[in-house]
Length: 317
Image 1 (cartoon, one colour):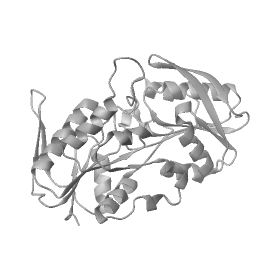
Image 2 (cartoon, rainbow, N blue to C red):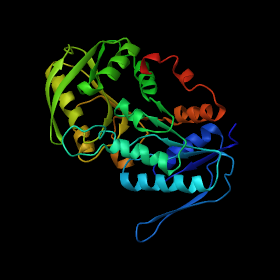
Image 3 (cartoon, rainbow, N blue to C red):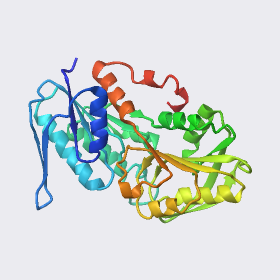
């Protein structure tokens, strides 16, 4: 319908892009990506994409603003090359926390970023586990918001944690935590907290964790303040082994040091954001989202249902 698949990668997540390429058995198309001494970015495609179905893979993790600008310039280069369709695949979408005016005279940066992606030339988008569901409404182009929690739940199920309790690290993640608990057939508890500036303070734990193993879940971990508070209050309430589970490992300082100091059994996350060797803790398990994104790309290209992939995981939709 849209020509052949042409797969491109920015510099945001090259290893993940290679994994997706291997899954699809489609090579990454060559390109030049240059940053000049004045920090201007230049993109040049090595071959024609006229009339083809183009997919650009670029995460927007650190360096955030560089990766965003690189993505937008890449999209513009693709648009002027006259493909039939351009789909941008963004494993992690930055600025997800700026999704509303929660105080006077502030921007809604998530909406701005969504609009820029469409304006730069993308016809569709694919992403994973948005921080807030309403961000989908900020885009003027159609897209697919996938979830890594199907992959995470399979990993946790294999651990046979039948006596565990799923704990939402904060009330904002309560719905997805409830869905994960239902998928694993486990009870749910919630950490109530109050945010003070960039720090967090856990106030209460709603639910019973005494004598149980706990799985503390969130969509992303940035500085790890919420996770540290959640682990501390769970242990204070009598929890046994603690497992941390989250989709996006942002891991801004001092997250690695804070997580490394916690008495947790396992930290389970994904490679939606590249995790450098110095950030990989000994108890960290990093699951790949390459097959999930690769299959999504294939179904988008062939015009097949993406929702079919999640029949087993209907609670996550």
